[in-house]
Amino acid sequence: MGSTTSAKNGTWRNWGGNVSARPAREVTPASADELAAAVRRAAEDGLPVKAVGTGHSFTSIAATDGLLVRPDLLTGIRHVDRAAGTVTVEAGTPLKRLNVALAREGLSLANMGDIMEQTVSGATGTGTHGTGRDSASLAAQVRGLELVTADGSVLTCSEKENPEVFAAARVGLGALGVVTALTFAVEPIFLLTAREEPMPFDRVCAEFDQLHAENEHFEFYWFPHTDNTNTKRNNRSAGPQRPVPRLRGWFEDEFLSNGAFQVVNWVGRAVPATVPAVARISSRALSARTYTDIPYKVFTSPRRVRFVEMEYAVPRAALVETLRELKAMVDRSPLRVSFPVEVRTAPADDITLSTASGRDSAYVAVHMFRGTPYRAYFTAAERIFTAHEGRPHWGKIHTRDAEYLSRVYPRFAEFTALRDRLDPERRFRNDHLRRVLGA
View 1 (cartoon, rainbow, N blue to C red):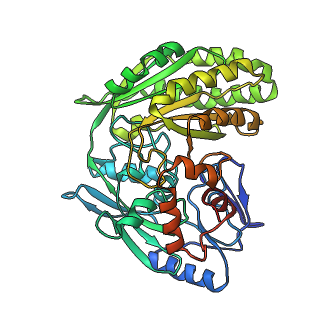
View 2 (cartoon, rainbow, N blue to C red; view 1 turned 30 degrees about the horizontal axis):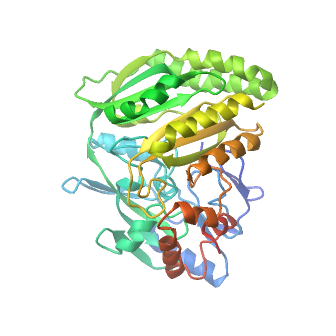
């Protein structure tokens, strides 16, 4: 499911299929020292350097025509410190492997996003998040990191060591260097009870503040062209463990959410007029259910239907108004949207360019099936998001530039000043970073 490189012509492509690049050369380092040597060689040859993860970003944030750094050998757990409640992992470790390995040790992250295909450094570096009233993004759970900088030195960063680099590099966009290891806060494994149930759009909007306040993790999906949503509340539980029965799990998570959903999207792409009717049926297909399991089995689910996505963080207080405007826009437009809109939250954090930096946030994500024209929908949605001072997810499609971003991020100049110090020659440059961070 990761990124793919066709060896024939050396082209790298992302998971969404909307970004490709042809690097001059590739390297697969097995250690921070090997990577540092490769960065120094690239500097001698005047090549820019970019590390890729599994290609789950929809932007060209990882694209390069210079040196492409692959994460495949920088994987595995380096160290579990039970006393400190931390685990140190190599940057290329997929979240899936981290979650399974932690569970074996009787440990877990406090919160996570809804897929776990990404590498830990790709996920943190672009600000990947789940939903949470009190617990924040993956990057906010990072307690330390190791960074190879432009001159080939290896920096260790934490609140105590290089704290100004630590503040920014947790969501570093690949602009400050290449992360080679991350230390996460972990805790003894716990159980979550998930309660999924349909709820009318107007009721979710009316009760949103209460639903957010009463649940540790609340999220919902709204199905465009309908008044239907599917809500999900995850809260810690004393047990017992009651996973989704295997057959029902296969039917709902694989057949309905992936298999049948794929067919629905094929039909919608071929005959857009069918989308609203089908949306009404599919928004009612998933019935209410409650189950209790270990965190990664509750937070994450497989996503096999390929799509492109835009997601913005708006101030939490502006969420309901933003959603109502989005719904009104879809209702009066000729758009045909077959993917649900996903809504999640995060508390404010202290990371320089985190989408939740300094403000309680709500996330609104719009998706389109891969291969369907998405620009009209995304442009109209983006107009609504930016009117509410929205901050685009760093790994998802958006059209914002440094001029806009410097207005919605109070600490933007702090990040660019640090970049000037760590990478004065822009060794880690590409066209995307030039746009979002400025020259």
